[in-house]
Amino acid sequence: MSKAIYLTKIDGKPGQVYYPLSVQTQAKPTPQGRELLIKLTAASLNHRDVFLRQHLYPGVTFDVPLGADGVGMVVAAGPEVIDPQRWQGKRVILNPGIGWESSPDGPEDPKGYRIMGGTKLYNKGTLQEYVTIEESEVEEAPEHLSDAEAAALPLTGLTGWRALVVKAGDKNSSKGAAILVTGIGGGVALMVLRFAVARGVNVYVTSSSEEKIKRAVELGAKAGVNYKEEGWEKKLLSLLPPGKAAFDAIIDGAGGDAVEKAVKLLKVGCDLSLSACNK
Image (cartoon, rainbow, N blue to C red; front, side, top):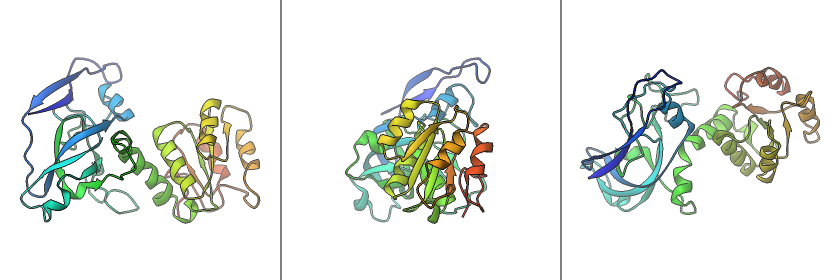
């Protein structure tokens, strides 16, 4: 048997309701076709899980376990898996969504990108003991990551990587480039910061919290400013390294009036339409 966590339906309006959770016991799934059976060892939460409980996320359902992120051990393989021994006993990270494989422009699937957990758009979730998933939708977990770390990587990691490298472009996210990450402190923003620092990018941040700015600098950001200060955008430009008059890309997760000001900080030929400078 396998236990799983589901939303429980109660009366209430979107944004005002907060669906309770229930633990349900169900039969352990059997892998079909090219599926692998994963015994989950860790799962992580995202803010979308809160939105689901508030009925503020598209496609909310009460028939699919919650959870988009997870890591676990392969314990069985379906009959059409080409090399089952390759996977047996391997620790793997689950791809949190389907429908977007390689196109830099967005999901190839006409149905769009569908994320695991709690919606009728994709009938898988990671807040359960066992889950079956296509072998193409898993990757071996890096040895240096703990289960908790590996489980927290996929959804925010993919979002951050696509914003930084795919959307901003390799040139604008490589050594020597200068990028601005707005609203530092959120999961995606922190992923972008870590990826960019590892790639040798000069990273600058904004926040309304001095504590978050300080922490970002400790993680490798060059500097940061409080966007509630008058003239914060001019202060940012003055902090750029010699030879840089503007940012190569901006990864925006804050929105609001910050966008109107931030777009003026970009080098000529860039825009903020996709949360980053286009190639």
